[in-house]
Length: 516
Image (cartoon, rainbow, N blue to C red; front, top):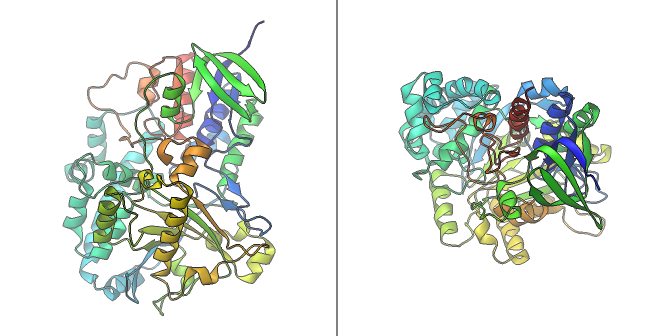
């Protein structure tokens, strides 16, 4: 019996897989996309996390910075991204002051630096981010083209000092050379530790790579709020793929990928189809396991806690407006020394105390995720994202999840004027509106090995000067050990974050390979 044949089969229905399917279908290719879950979107989904409460939260990923305008325009995506005025607020642990970075008022930012005893660091802070901004403006236009070589990237940046400080020296060195205050240093370092378990001075520079990705988005490093939640982004990509003619199937767990044939389970049936190319939009380690190869190690380093509150909590600092403090990123116990202490604690197998974490309040910027009743009542959402909490700490299963959740909530309460538990809403059954997602949840539900949101260690967004760039797959950074299988997810060379770049690069390589 003959099998159905497609030009391309995409495995994985997250935002990258949807991006690839949309591009290829628009180019006239016959495309089948297979998703294991009963819905599309992967980690870029919204959900009613607290049944009956009227809050539609971004369950996993939550902000957008790395999605190029080119992808939005090419695919005609109808999405709205809102910019936040406030960059961050960082309470002084154990104190009643904090550092507010206000993009809309430079004098207020200067006064805040002075209030925490760091007036002398303002010039160094501004200089560091001005240099990072020049790097971003040089690098951002390169992400939608084929990989450039390392020497070309250095020439594009055009400043040997920037290249040395951000691409060659451990991030800790440039932070320590730029500012002196422990709190100020910690705020800078956090951008190098998102789901990245590292010390500021690690020689492998994973913290530098993470920092780079967090400051180059859009050429500005701004992280924007998707109106309607992250599900609005994946929903727009799904519509683009369907409208272009891609066939999208859910509830289909792929069991083999071999020589252009993909086999999957569809309810109780085993189904196969052939394709000229397979685009793998899942984690590379899962593909390796499927094909009998030893997967590379991957480990995430975060706990995500979603909260629904009666109101914003009171702050220790009386002069700060909570809507300003929670209007950007709210840093919790993230001093420079505290982040290193947390790293060493976790390295020894101990849950960091206090837990370093940061907060994002979606509902301040975009209240549409709340029902009218919640909006009128003054309710808000908070998303807490911990740092320096590697997957290895989850050996105890659900018991460790409860312990990590408590550590996150206690850390948050320690910098507030009241316990966070006192402002939590409760559902109809009297349960506090708290939802915790650990690295094990990401591994079990989303098939992200080790809970790594990047599907593995991050890579610089360029090629070395001596690696081969002879094939389309090599030029676009989407190679696997099989010429007919291309990486199309976060594990490709430049695919991390909610960017669509993994799918975009794979689609571009696929079109080159088929003569388009």
